[in-house]
Length: 474
Image (cartoon, rainbow, N blue to C red):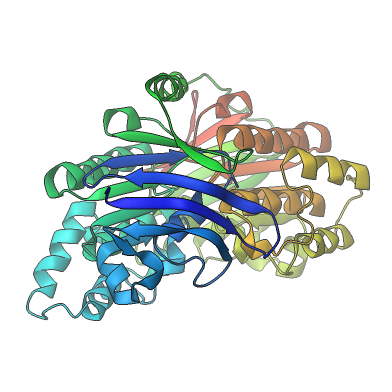
Protein backbone atom coordinates (compact mmCIF):
# COMPACT_ATOMS: atom_id res chain seq x y z
CA UNK A 1 0.00 0.00 0.00
CA UNK A 2 1.27 3.51 -0.84
CA UNK A 3 1.33 6.33 1.71
CA UNK A 4 -1.74 8.07 0.22
CA UNK A 5 -4.34 5.98 -1.60
CA UNK A 6 -7.26 7.53 -3.48
CA UNK A 7 -9.83 4.95 -4.58
CA UNK A 8 -12.94 5.46 -6.75
CA UNK A 9 -13.20 9.09 -5.62
CA UNK A 10 -16.19 11.03 -6.98
CA UNK A 11 -16.94 14.50 -5.60
CA UNK A 12 -19.49 17.24 -6.30
CA UNK A 13 -20.19 20.52 -4.54
CA UNK A 14 -23.94 20.14 -5.09
CA UNK A 15 -25.89 16.92 -4.75
CA UNK A 16 -26.81 15.92 -8.28
CA UNK A 17 -24.72 18.78 -9.69
CA UNK A 18 -21.59 18.84 -11.82
CA UNK A 19 -18.90 16.46 -10.64
CA UNK A 20 -15.44 17.87 -10.05
CA UNK A 21 -13.66 14.51 -9.86
CA UNK A 22 -15.05 11.22 -11.10
CA UNK A 23 -13.92 7.65 -10.29
CA UNK A 24 -10.48 8.97 -9.37
CA UNK A 25 -7.73 6.43 -8.68
CA UNK A 26 -4.40 7.78 -7.45
CA UNK A 27 -1.50 7.01 -5.15
CA UNK A 28 1.38 8.95 -3.63
CA UNK A 29 4.44 7.30 -2.12
CA UNK A 30 6.07 8.45 1.09
CA UNK A 31 9.08 10.77 0.83
CA UNK A 32 8.27 12.06 -2.66
CA UNK A 33 7.95 15.51 -4.23
CA UNK A 34 4.75 15.74 -6.29
CA UNK A 35 3.46 18.57 -8.48
CA UNK A 36 -0.17 18.92 -9.60
CA UNK A 37 -1.03 21.20 -12.51
CA UNK A 38 -4.08 21.97 -14.65
CA UNK A 39 -6.20 24.92 -15.87
CA UNK A 40 -7.59 27.57 -13.51
CA UNK A 41 -10.80 26.32 -11.89
CA UNK A 42 -10.28 22.69 -12.85
CA UNK A 43 -10.42 21.40 -9.25
CA UNK A 44 -6.83 21.29 -7.99
CA UNK A 45 -7.62 23.15 -4.75
CA UNK A 46 -10.68 20.96 -4.27
CA UNK A 47 -8.52 17.85 -4.51
CA UNK A 48 -6.07 19.14 -1.89
CA UNK A 49 -8.93 19.90 0.48
CA UNK A 50 -10.27 16.38 -0.04
CA UNK A 51 -6.87 14.92 0.80
CA UNK A 52 -6.70 16.71 4.14
CA UNK A 53 -10.32 16.03 5.08
CA UNK A 54 -11.70 19.58 4.84
CA UNK A 55 -14.06 18.35 2.13
CA UNK A 56 -16.68 16.97 2.44
CA UNK A 57 -16.63 17.76 6.18
CA UNK A 58 -17.33 21.45 5.55
CA UNK A 59 -18.82 21.49 2.07
CA UNK A 60 -19.65 19.31 -0.89
CA UNK A 61 -20.60 15.69 -1.30
CA UNK A 62 -18.34 12.65 -1.53
CA UNK A 63 -20.49 10.57 -3.83
CA UNK A 64 -18.18 7.56 -3.86
CA UNK A 65 -14.72 6.37 -2.91
CA UNK A 66 -12.33 7.02 -0.07
CA UNK A 67 -8.91 8.44 0.77
CA UNK A 68 -6.46 6.53 2.98
CA UNK A 69 -3.53 8.22 4.72
CA UNK A 70 -1.02 5.60 5.78
CA UNK A 71 -3.86 3.07 5.85
CA UNK A 72 -6.31 5.28 7.77
CA UNK A 73 -9.51 6.67 6.26
CA UNK A 74 -9.09 10.46 6.37
CA UNK A 75 -12.82 10.86 6.94
CA UNK A 76 -12.62 8.80 10.13
CA UNK A 77 -9.62 10.61 11.62
CA UNK A 78 -10.00 13.26 14.34
CA UNK A 79 -8.88 16.83 13.65
CA UNK A 80 -5.82 16.33 15.88
CA UNK A 81 -4.88 13.11 14.09
CA UNK A 82 -5.18 14.80 10.71
CA UNK A 83 -3.15 17.83 11.83
CA UNK A 84 -0.25 15.59 12.84
CA UNK A 85 -0.44 13.60 9.63
CA UNK A 86 -1.25 16.17 6.92
CA UNK A 87 -1.10 19.98 6.64
CA UNK A 88 -2.43 22.33 3.94
CA UNK A 89 -1.17 25.79 2.98
CA UNK A 90 -4.12 27.68 1.47
CA UNK A 91 -3.79 29.63 -1.76
CA UNK A 92 -4.78 32.79 0.17
CA UNK A 93 -2.53 32.60 3.26
CA UNK A 94 -4.39 35.26 5.24
CA UNK A 95 -7.31 32.84 5.56
CA UNK A 96 -5.20 30.73 7.93
CA UNK A 97 -4.07 33.37 10.41
CA UNK A 98 -5.70 33.68 13.84
CA UNK A 99 -3.13 35.84 15.66
CA UNK A 100 -1.68 39.34 14.96
CA UNK A 101 1.95 38.41 14.10
CA UNK A 102 3.83 35.41 12.64
CA UNK A 103 5.58 34.70 15.95
CA UNK A 104 2.29 34.71 17.87
CA UNK A 105 0.71 32.53 15.19
CA UNK A 106 3.49 29.98 15.52
CA UNK A 107 3.24 29.92 19.33
CA UNK A 108 -0.54 29.50 19.05
CA UNK A 109 -0.06 26.61 16.61
CA UNK A 110 2.48 24.81 18.77
CA UNK A 111 0.42 25.28 21.91
CA UNK A 112 -2.59 23.75 20.18
CA UNK A 113 -0.42 20.74 19.37
CA UNK A 114 0.33 20.50 23.11
CA UNK A 115 4.03 21.01 22.48
CA UNK A 116 6.22 21.03 25.57
CA UNK A 117 6.52 24.77 26.47
CA UNK A 118 10.26 24.36 26.95
CA UNK A 119 10.60 23.22 23.31
CA UNK A 120 8.55 26.01 21.72
CA UNK A 121 11.23 28.76 21.50
CA UNK A 122 13.80 26.48 19.85
CA UNK A 123 11.28 24.95 17.46
CA UNK A 124 9.90 28.37 16.61
CA UNK A 125 13.29 29.91 15.79
CA UNK A 126 14.26 26.89 13.72
CA UNK A 127 11.14 27.19 11.54
CA UNK A 128 11.52 30.97 11.14
CA UNK A 129 15.14 30.56 10.03
CA UNK A 130 14.22 27.72 7.67
CA UNK A 131 11.76 29.93 5.76
CA UNK A 132 13.70 33.21 6.11
CA UNK A 133 10.90 34.80 8.11
CA UNK A 134 12.83 35.92 11.20
CA UNK A 135 13.20 39.55 10.12
CA UNK A 136 9.43 40.17 10.08
CA UNK A 137 8.27 37.64 12.68
CA UNK A 138 7.05 40.38 15.03
CA UNK A 139 5.33 42.58 12.45
CA UNK A 140 1.56 42.53 12.18
CA UNK A 141 0.19 40.45 9.31
CA UNK A 142 -1.70 43.51 8.07
CA UNK A 143 1.64 45.22 7.34
CA UNK A 144 3.17 42.29 5.46
CA UNK A 145 3.23 41.98 1.69
CA UNK A 146 1.47 39.06 0.02
CA UNK A 147 4.79 37.28 -0.47
CA UNK A 148 5.77 37.78 3.15
CA UNK A 149 2.41 36.41 4.27
CA UNK A 150 2.98 33.31 2.15
CA UNK A 151 6.37 32.74 3.77
CA UNK A 152 4.84 33.20 7.23
CA UNK A 153 2.02 30.76 6.41
CA UNK A 154 4.58 28.22 5.22
CA UNK A 155 6.38 28.60 8.58
CA UNK A 156 3.15 27.72 10.37
CA UNK A 157 2.62 24.67 8.16
CA UNK A 158 6.17 23.46 8.78
CA UNK A 159 5.78 24.00 12.52
CA UNK A 160 3.03 21.37 12.48
CA UNK A 161 5.75 18.88 11.45
CA UNK A 162 3.17 16.84 9.53
CA UNK A 163 4.28 13.87 7.42
CA UNK A 164 2.39 15.19 4.37
CA UNK A 165 2.60 18.83 3.27
CA UNK A 166 0.06 20.17 0.77
CA UNK A 167 0.68 23.57 -0.80
CA UNK A 168 -1.80 25.43 -3.00
CA UNK A 169 -0.04 27.92 -5.31
CA UNK A 170 2.60 28.65 -2.62
CA UNK A 171 4.72 30.92 -4.81
CA UNK A 172 1.96 33.00 -6.41
CA UNK A 173 2.91 36.26 -4.67
CA UNK A 174 6.62 35.80 -4.10
CA UNK A 175 9.48 37.24 -6.10
CA UNK A 176 11.69 34.87 -8.17
CA UNK A 177 14.54 34.87 -5.65
CA UNK A 178 12.25 33.95 -2.75
CA UNK A 179 10.53 31.32 -4.88
CA UNK A 180 13.86 29.62 -5.67
CA UNK A 181 14.85 29.78 -1.98
CA UNK A 182 11.61 28.20 -0.74
CA UNK A 183 11.60 25.55 -3.46
CA UNK A 184 15.04 24.37 -2.33
CA UNK A 185 13.83 24.31 1.28
CA UNK A 186 10.84 22.14 0.38
CA UNK A 187 13.01 19.78 -1.62
CA UNK A 188 15.26 19.42 1.45
CA UNK A 189 12.25 18.40 3.55
CA UNK A 190 11.67 15.51 1.16
CA UNK A 191 15.28 14.37 0.76
CA UNK A 192 16.45 14.92 4.34
CA UNK A 193 13.33 14.35 6.46
CA UNK A 194 11.28 12.01 4.29
CA UNK A 195 8.29 14.36 4.06
CA UNK A 196 5.73 13.89 1.30
CA UNK A 197 5.11 17.16 -0.56
CA UNK A 198 2.23 17.79 -2.98
CA UNK A 199 2.17 21.22 -4.65
CA UNK A 200 -0.56 22.62 -6.87
CA UNK A 201 0.91 25.17 -9.29
CA UNK A 202 0.35 26.70 -12.71
CA UNK A 203 3.97 27.78 -13.12
CA UNK A 204 6.18 24.71 -13.61
CA UNK A 205 9.45 26.61 -13.81
CA UNK A 206 12.32 24.79 -12.01
CA UNK A 207 10.15 21.90 -10.83
CA UNK A 208 11.87 19.56 -13.27
CA UNK A 209 14.88 19.60 -10.95
CA UNK A 210 13.01 18.56 -7.79
CA UNK A 211 9.74 16.83 -8.75
CA UNK A 212 9.59 13.07 -8.54
CA UNK A 213 6.17 13.03 -10.20
CA UNK A 214 4.03 15.42 -12.22
CA UNK A 215 0.24 15.04 -12.12
CA UNK A 216 -2.20 16.75 -14.51
CA UNK A 217 -5.88 17.48 -13.85
CA UNK A 218 -7.96 17.28 -17.03
CA UNK A 219 -11.31 19.06 -16.33
CA UNK A 220 -12.95 17.51 -19.40
CA UNK A 221 -12.29 14.00 -18.10
CA UNK A 222 -12.65 15.03 -14.42
CA UNK A 223 -9.54 13.02 -13.80
CA UNK A 224 -6.01 13.51 -12.49
CA UNK A 225 -3.40 11.41 -14.26
CA UNK A 226 0.30 10.82 -13.75
CA UNK A 227 2.24 12.40 -16.61
CA UNK A 228 4.35 9.86 -18.48
CA UNK A 229 7.98 10.75 -19.30
CA UNK A 230 7.05 12.26 -22.67
CA UNK A 231 4.26 14.49 -21.30
CA UNK A 232 6.40 15.46 -18.31
CA UNK A 233 9.27 16.51 -20.58
CA UNK A 234 6.92 18.44 -22.88
CA UNK A 235 5.24 20.37 -20.05
CA UNK A 236 8.49 21.24 -18.30
CA UNK A 237 10.10 22.21 -21.61
CA UNK A 238 7.23 24.57 -22.36
CA UNK A 239 7.86 26.45 -19.12
CA UNK A 240 11.60 26.36 -19.60
CA UNK A 241 11.08 28.09 -22.94
CA UNK A 242 8.79 30.62 -21.27
CA UNK A 243 11.26 31.25 -18.44
CA UNK A 244 11.44 34.97 -18.25
CA UNK A 245 14.07 36.86 -20.17
CA UNK A 246 14.14 40.64 -20.10
CA UNK A 247 12.51 42.26 -23.15
CA UNK A 248 12.95 45.88 -24.18
CA UNK A 249 10.14 48.33 -23.32
CA UNK A 250 9.86 52.06 -23.90
CA UNK A 251 10.94 54.73 -21.46
CA UNK A 252 8.31 57.46 -20.96
CA UNK A 253 8.38 60.80 -22.73
CA UNK A 254 8.78 63.52 -20.13
CA UNK A 255 6.25 65.76 -21.84
CA UNK A 256 3.45 63.19 -21.61
CA UNK A 257 0.31 63.87 -19.50
CA UNK A 258 1.02 63.14 -15.82
CA UNK A 259 -1.47 61.12 -13.74
CA UNK A 260 0.37 61.01 -10.40
CA UNK A 261 3.36 62.96 -9.13
CA UNK A 262 5.53 62.39 -6.05
CA UNK A 263 7.62 65.15 -4.45
CA UNK A 264 9.70 64.65 -1.29
CA UNK A 265 7.47 61.63 -0.77
CA UNK A 266 7.76 58.95 1.92
CA UNK A 267 5.46 56.21 3.16
CA UNK A 268 5.54 53.02 5.18
CA UNK A 269 4.17 51.45 8.33
CA UNK A 270 6.83 50.90 11.02
CA UNK A 271 9.57 52.24 8.77
CA UNK A 272 9.95 54.18 5.52
CA UNK A 273 9.52 51.73 2.66
CA UNK A 274 9.71 54.40 -0.01
CA UNK A 275 11.56 57.74 -0.01
CA UNK A 276 11.27 59.51 -3.33
CA UNK A 277 12.56 62.98 -4.13
CA UNK A 278 10.54 63.26 -7.35
CA UNK A 279 8.72 60.87 -9.67
CA UNK A 280 5.87 60.87 -12.18
CA UNK A 281 3.35 58.24 -13.33
CA UNK A 282 1.91 58.93 -16.76
CA UNK A 283 -1.71 58.90 -17.92
CA UNK A 284 -3.18 56.62 -20.59
CA UNK A 285 -0.62 53.82 -20.37
CA UNK A 286 -0.27 50.30 -19.03
CA UNK A 287 2.54 50.38 -16.50
CA UNK A 288 3.97 47.36 -14.68
CA UNK A 289 5.45 47.67 -11.18
CA UNK A 290 8.05 45.12 -10.05
CA UNK A 291 10.36 44.67 -7.08
CA UNK A 292 11.21 42.19 -4.31
CA UNK A 293 8.66 41.17 -1.68
CA UNK A 294 8.13 43.66 1.11
CA UNK A 295 9.74 46.71 -0.50
CA UNK A 296 6.52 48.75 -0.47
CA UNK A 297 4.74 48.26 -3.81
CA UNK A 298 1.34 47.56 -2.23
CA UNK A 299 1.96 50.29 0.34
CA UNK A 300 2.46 52.84 -2.44
CA UNK A 301 -0.74 51.70 -4.15
CA UNK A 302 -2.58 52.03 -0.83
CA UNK A 303 -1.28 55.59 -0.49
CA UNK A 304 -2.45 56.45 -4.02
CA UNK A 305 -5.86 54.93 -3.20
CA UNK A 306 -6.19 56.97 0.03
CA UNK A 307 -5.90 53.85 2.20
CA UNK A 308 -2.47 54.68 3.60
CA UNK A 309 -0.95 57.88 4.94
CA UNK A 310 2.15 59.50 3.50
CA UNK A 311 4.59 62.34 4.05
CA UNK A 312 5.48 64.96 1.50
CA UNK A 313 3.41 65.42 -1.63
CA UNK A 314 1.43 62.92 -3.73
CA UNK A 315 -0.80 64.50 -6.38
CA UNK A 316 -3.37 63.32 -8.88
CA UNK A 317 -3.68 65.71 -11.81
CA UNK A 318 -1.86 68.32 -9.67
CA UNK A 319 -4.33 67.90 -6.77
CA UNK A 320 -3.00 66.71 -3.41
CA UNK A 321 -4.55 63.26 -2.86
CA UNK A 322 -4.72 63.61 0.93
CA UNK A 323 -6.99 66.65 0.51
CA UNK A 324 -9.38 65.07 -2.01
CA UNK A 325 -12.77 63.74 -0.91
CA UNK A 326 -12.82 59.96 -1.15
CA UNK A 327 -16.33 59.84 -2.63
CA UNK A 328 -15.25 61.87 -5.65
CA UNK A 329 -11.73 60.50 -6.00
CA UNK A 330 -12.77 56.84 -5.82
CA UNK A 331 -14.88 57.32 -8.94
CA UNK A 332 -11.71 58.29 -10.78
CA UNK A 333 -9.09 55.99 -9.25
CA UNK A 334 -9.83 52.44 -8.05
CA UNK A 335 -7.63 49.81 -6.43
CA UNK A 336 -8.12 46.16 -7.42
CA UNK A 337 -7.20 44.33 -4.21
CA UNK A 338 -4.74 41.47 -4.01
CA UNK A 339 -7.44 39.31 -2.43
CA UNK A 340 -10.55 39.22 -4.67
CA UNK A 341 -13.05 38.38 -1.93
CA UNK A 342 -12.22 41.71 -0.25
CA UNK A 343 -13.85 43.38 -3.26
CA UNK A 344 -17.03 41.33 -3.54
CA UNK A 345 -20.22 42.85 -2.13
CA UNK A 346 -22.90 40.41 -3.28
CA UNK A 347 -23.46 36.67 -3.00
CA UNK A 348 -23.71 35.33 -6.55
CA UNK A 349 -21.85 36.04 -9.79
CA UNK A 350 -25.07 37.38 -11.34
CA UNK A 351 -25.62 39.81 -8.46
CA UNK A 352 -22.04 41.08 -8.68
CA UNK A 353 -22.39 41.67 -12.42
CA UNK A 354 -25.70 43.48 -11.98
CA UNK A 355 -24.22 45.70 -9.27
CA UNK A 356 -21.27 46.73 -11.44
CA UNK A 357 -23.48 47.43 -14.46
CA UNK A 358 -25.91 49.44 -12.31
CA UNK A 359 -23.14 51.64 -10.93
CA UNK A 360 -20.95 51.89 -14.03
CA UNK A 361 -19.56 55.29 -14.87
CA UNK A 362 -19.56 54.78 -18.65
CA UNK A 363 -21.64 52.75 -21.10
CA UNK A 364 -18.66 50.97 -22.59
CA UNK A 365 -20.03 47.43 -22.32
CA UNK A 366 -23.14 46.02 -23.98
CA UNK A 367 -24.93 42.92 -22.66
CA UNK A 368 -23.57 40.93 -25.60
CA UNK A 369 -20.04 42.06 -24.80
CA UNK A 370 -20.45 41.06 -21.15
CA UNK A 371 -21.73 37.64 -22.14
CA UNK A 372 -18.87 37.20 -24.62
CA UNK A 373 -16.38 38.10 -21.88
CA UNK A 374 -17.94 35.55 -19.52
CA UNK A 375 -17.55 32.87 -22.17
CA UNK A 376 -13.98 33.96 -22.94
CA UNK A 377 -13.01 33.88 -19.26
CA UNK A 378 -14.71 30.52 -18.59
CA UNK A 379 -17.28 32.16 -16.30
CA UNK A 380 -20.34 31.50 -18.45
CA UNK A 381 -23.00 29.37 -16.81
CA UNK A 382 -21.79 30.35 -13.35
CA UNK A 383 -24.14 33.31 -12.83
CA UNK A 384 -26.05 31.56 -10.02
CA UNK A 385 -22.89 30.32 -8.33
CA UNK A 386 -21.85 31.83 -4.99
CA UNK A 387 -18.75 33.95 -5.59
CA UNK A 388 -16.97 32.50 -2.57
CA UNK A 389 -17.25 29.01 -4.05
CA UNK A 390 -15.37 29.94 -7.20
CA UNK A 391 -11.76 28.86 -7.55
CA UNK A 392 -9.16 31.52 -6.78
CA UNK A 393 -8.46 31.94 -10.49
CA UNK A 394 -12.17 32.34 -11.25
CA UNK A 395 -12.52 34.87 -8.43
CA UNK A 396 -9.62 36.83 -9.89
CA UNK A 397 -11.06 36.89 -13.40
CA UNK A 398 -14.49 37.93 -12.11
CA UNK A 399 -12.98 40.65 -9.91
CA UNK A 400 -11.11 42.24 -12.81
CA UNK A 401 -14.10 41.97 -15.16
CA UNK A 402 -16.29 43.73 -12.56
CA UNK A 403 -13.79 46.57 -12.22
CA UNK A 404 -13.61 46.98 -15.99
CA UNK A 405 -17.41 47.07 -16.18
CA UNK A 406 -17.49 49.90 -13.63
CA UNK A 407 -15.58 52.09 -16.07
CA UNK A 408 -13.28 53.81 -13.54
CA UNK A 409 -10.72 55.82 -15.59
CA UNK A 410 -7.65 54.69 -13.59
CA UNK A 411 -7.12 51.19 -12.24
CA UNK A 412 -4.43 50.13 -9.79
CA UNK A 413 -4.12 46.34 -9.79
CA UNK A 414 -2.22 44.49 -7.05
CA UNK A 415 -0.99 41.12 -8.38
CA UNK A 416 -3.89 40.63 -10.84
CA UNK A 417 -2.38 37.46 -12.34
CA UNK A 418 -2.19 35.44 -9.12
CA UNK A 419 -3.87 32.04 -9.42
CA UNK A 420 -4.18 32.22 -13.23
CA UNK A 421 -2.80 29.77 -15.76
CA UNK A 422 -0.93 31.30 -18.70
CA UNK A 423 -3.96 31.18 -21.02
CA UNK A 424 -6.12 33.04 -18.49
CA UNK A 425 -3.32 35.50 -17.68
CA UNK A 426 -2.93 36.42 -21.34
CA UNK A 427 -6.68 36.91 -21.71
CA UNK A 428 -6.80 39.23 -18.69
CA UNK A 429 -3.84 41.22 -19.99
CA UNK A 430 -5.60 41.52 -23.34
CA UNK A 431 -8.65 43.08 -21.68
CA UNK A 432 -6.48 45.48 -19.69
CA UNK A 433 -4.52 46.48 -22.78
CA UNK A 434 -7.71 47.12 -24.75
CA UNK A 435 -9.02 49.28 -21.90
CA UNK A 436 -5.93 51.45 -22.30
CA UNK A 437 -5.79 51.50 -26.11
CA UNK A 438 -9.49 51.86 -26.92
CA UNK A 439 -10.96 53.52 -23.81
CA UNK A 440 -8.03 55.72 -22.82
CA UNK A 441 -7.78 54.24 -19.33
CA UNK A 442 -4.70 54.29 -17.14
CA UNK A 443 -3.69 50.85 -15.85
CA UNK A 444 -0.93 50.46 -13.28
CA UNK A 445 -0.28 46.93 -12.01
CA UNK A 446 2.03 45.12 -9.61
CA UNK A 447 3.21 41.72 -10.76
CA UNK A 448 5.83 39.10 -9.93
CA UNK A 449 4.61 37.02 -12.86
CA UNK A 450 6.44 38.54 -15.83
CA UNK A 451 6.00 35.94 -18.58
CA UNK A 452 4.75 37.66 -21.76
CA UNK A 453 4.05 40.95 -19.93
CA UNK A 454 6.38 42.98 -22.13
CA UNK A 455 4.01 42.58 -25.10
CA UNK A 456 1.28 44.35 -23.13
CA UNK A 457 3.20 46.92 -21.09
CA UNK A 458 4.02 50.45 -22.14
CA UNK A 459 6.31 51.15 -19.19
CA UNK A 460 8.10 49.27 -16.41
CA UNK A 461 8.77 50.76 -12.98
CA UNK A 462 11.01 49.01 -10.47
CA UNK A 463 10.86 49.66 -6.73
CA UNK A 464 13.96 48.68 -4.80
CA UNK A 465 16.05 50.18 -2.01
CA UNK A 466 13.23 52.65 -1.28
CA UNK A 467 13.36 54.29 -4.73
CA UNK A 468 11.36 54.10 -7.95
CA UNK A 469 12.99 53.97 -11.38
CA UNK A 470 11.81 53.50 -14.95
CA UNK A 471 13.45 50.49 -16.60
CA UNK A 472 14.15 49.92 -20.29
CA UNK A 473 13.43 46.20 -20.05
CA UNK A 474 10.76 43.99 -18.49
